[in-house]
Image 1: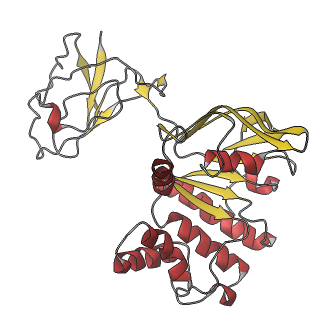
Image 2: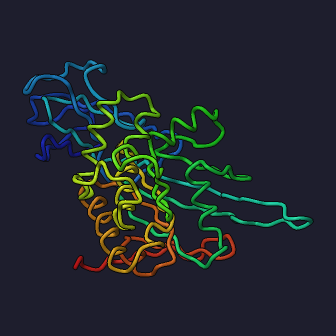
Image 3: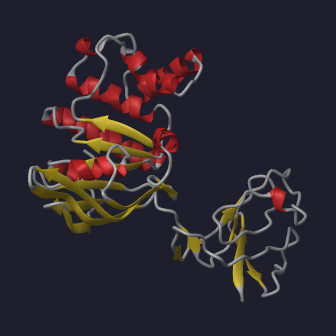
Length: 323
């Protein structure tokens, strides 16, 4: 086996015995097993070390951070990245296999979601479209852990969402997801800052830290001067920005949106979507957006179209240039 090991971007040849030619910083070790739930694809495996700059991790597995379950390399030097292009393990941000959701309606059996398979990679912005009653919101509820499927599997960043305890699912949802709703769902008796900090307080964060993070999130959405205003004192667009701040305050990896611009006028919808697109580009936040609006879907990288509980198409789109 001959591989290229790269240290800080410099390609170096690696012999089959694991010794790196002309590389004084270390000998990589290889393990070729791939763990469950993952897929092998062309790419790189990365590991970092806590060793001081220029020091070598002397073959001690405690000296490096193991990335994935299929391969690692003894790393060298603070901040160095060691990469092996033998097939990387890319864990999807959100993945579903063979999802079904059945409801009883009198003597009838309603198939709200029918054998749906979806994979959303980290950093993607994906729209789900379709007519009313096609299963979009039901699918979103299943993917978010709100509504359990009749059968099938959902994984979030490689971890199973179902088949675990309620407490474990609540913890996984709280750590991984942010939610943005059509109706904002702000508590009217709380200020903007209090609404945003609420998820942090429920997780047990200290009040002063929660408030600090809430104000930082409001600043990110351009509402740093509206922290003490209650929802009734804010416009619809401002309320939705507060909802965005609340969704991102705990730094989730995935944000799920159910018609996030449904109650906004065209100009305000563009402003909110520009904000979400900017977050996707700059922070690599993963978005799944249920929408009826083709203009919203056009700003996403992919559009999934549903009908009668099934996925009809899953197509890549090129978002238009921001105005």
